[in-house]
Length: 328
Ligand SMILES: Cc1cc2nc3c(=O)[nH]c(=O)nc-3n(C[C@H](O)[C@H](O)[C@H](O)COP(=O)(O)O)c2cc1C
Image 1 (cartoon, rainbow, N blue to C red):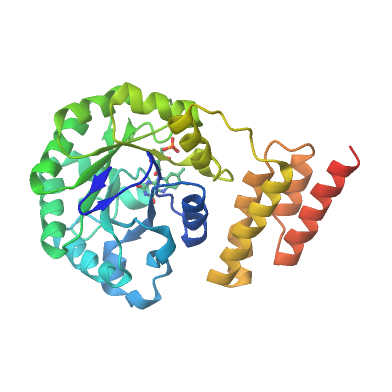
Image 2: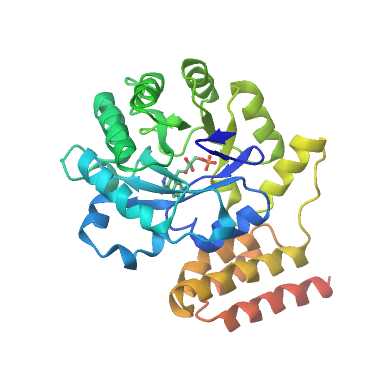
């Protein structure tokens, strides 16, 4: 898929996930075949007030390209200023969050409208935001929207058209309303409707759980790229699996236990290098829990994982996991 002047390889992107898609995880997903990654959301208001140099969330590495920085806010001027600041981190695109359902985001913002998915209640404001950010930067500007705010205001098509007219270069659509949060299953039909209604690339999102569902989302909606969120947690291999299935029709076997443990250690080691061991290990506990999911005695290993303080604690845990396999 083309986005501005760059090409996204493959058909799968990593969705932005606050607290999860940090530099280390994005890098891992790119290594396994994600063609495009987006940072965790960054507050436009926070950014314009704080020293941006300290903003860890926006740090991008050269080997995770193309990559977008995602901003949230509700004030066109703040968002434009924040996009200018974000440019110091050399993103390939700026993505605007119009989908987050969290009350602390929906009730926040410089002009008291509300950010994230609350923006969809005011399509005209969505358009003003896109044009303000477009005027501030010379790289592609994308938006990530939901189906609508609630079942009485399903307006993804309208918002997508307004954003396109305002200059958006691509639109990611999560097929759920704000009211639905992350359940029940995503409505892919709305993604197909958006794809029909705009000329810019459309990124389909919601409920891609494996290679076959990625192929189904592409086929059923005609979208240009699929975006994988929760199914990538503790499972960066999903990008390799999607690629193999889409290019050769091959269903790859799941990673071996050995590979799972090696990749988990690589992921968490990178987090320690990036953030310092103490903070990284606290954040790594949840990742370890996901990598250990489905193993025999997973509950007991996960109890150990939530207490990890040091990288050595994790090495000991991996040793326990491997020893158990040898005794089977
Ligand atoms: C823990 C978590 C954090 C998220 N953070 C963000 C975020 O920062 N920005 C955003 O646009 N969406 C965020 N999302 C939504 C995801 O990007 C995605 O739209 C949603 O999970 C649906 O895709 P999935 O079914 O593949 O998980 C988050 C989702 C989860 C589960």
